[in-house]
Every structure is written in C-alpha cells, then in structure tokens.
Image 1 (cartoon, rainbow, N blue to C red):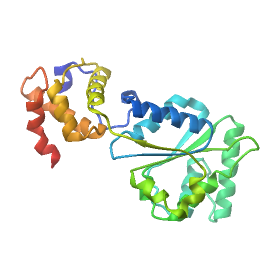
Image 2 (spheres, rainbow, N blue to C red; image 1 turned 180 degrees about the vertical axis):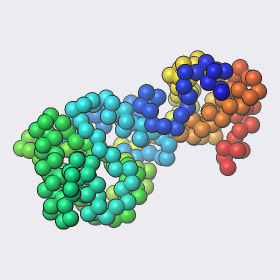
Image 3 (cartoon, rainbow, N blue to C red; image 1 turned 135 degrees about the horizontal axis):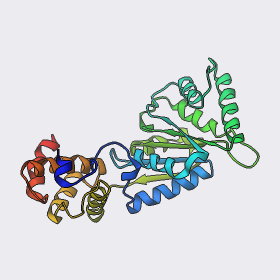
Length: 266
C-alpha cells in the first residue's frame, strides 16, 4: 500500500525488534557498548527504560554483535516460582529432562554451562520484563547462578531488563547480595528532539526511502506527543504515512500529525 507510494522496500516503522533498525542515539550506543563489555566479562547487567524505549531491540543487536561464541537464552515472562525459573533455565540450556529438585536442577545447569564453555560458547541468560518478578527468591536464584565459575572467569553472563520500577525493587536491602554482583546498572532514556528527527530519517532510509519526509514542524509535534519514546514514534509515524498516502501528500507535516493524534492518544 503506502510502501510503493513512498518507494519503501519494507515497512520503516515496524514494531518488531529488528536490530537492523536500531537507531544508535547517544544513550543507545553507550548502552550497547557497556552491555557488550559486561557480557564479555560474564557478569550481571541491569538495563531499564520506559516501555518502548528499545531495550529488547538492544538485546537483539547485542546478540548479533557478539556472534556465535555466545548463546543467548531469553526468558520473556519471568513471573515464575524459583523452581520453575531454574527449570526454564535448564530447558533453555538444552537439559533434556530437568530434575524435580533444586539441587538436581542446579547440578544440571552447572554441567550444561560448563560443557558450553568447554565448547567455546558462553551462555547469556536474558531475563526480560524483570519488574514482573513477584517472588523475591527468583532474584536469589539469579544471584546463585553466578557461582558457576572457573578459577579465572564466570561460566555465564546475565542480563536483566525491565521498566524503571525494577530499579526501585532492587533498591531494597533484601537484594543487597545481588546488587553487589551487578557490574552494570544502566537506564535507557527516551530520544531528544534532535534524535527524534534523526531516528525518523534513519528508519526511512533503512526501509529504502529518503530522509526529510517528515517536516520539522511534524517532527516537533511527534516529539511533543510521544516524549521521544521509539515505540510511540513508530506508531505515530506509521499512521501518518497512511494518512499521507490516502491524501496523496508528498510530505508529512504537523497538520497530518494533528489529524491522527486523537485516535492514537485513545
């Protein structure tokens, strides 16, 4: 539909976490570089940010950047009991028949990560939506996983991602032992006005289009309405493209953005 009209090869503002479309703002670039270092050091990292700021896309980009020497294991719904958390981790590490007991599971996980390292592969456990963990003992199990070590290094890296309330959760004295093992605690900010314009042009070009399709007043309005949150920008930009296509507009200005804002705010 609008792809042919604007000359796109693909949709420029898809909501899927495609690392090709990761715009490296100053904050995103710094986060990616720090995460890469922490994973290479096989430590624990915490990455927080508002909904839609690009945390998941960053994790996919990190996976692509680090390559085949690292095996990423994603837990996307960590609202689990401690035992179920360990069973899920064991399955992700290809343990065929996870044990029923905690001791048995830990032994299986230890064997699996040791074998992976022996084969030249470092497992990376990525826990998404960390703020929904409703059993504090799950964080204890995460901490204990870092006990799997050789004399000179850990056997796996751990990345915990979540919304800002994850930081408040982990600030409790209850989690002091875990905090002492966290090598990185990074908060991902939304885009600035200038970065919002660069973001729009970057994704247009990645999709095969040309920059400048969104006029400066449209960018200003989009920034005001979305607060610079990439996922919100994607939604607004996609709807603006549809309206522009339907009205045969060559450019997207603030009039078009204002036309769709009420619908999107709902």
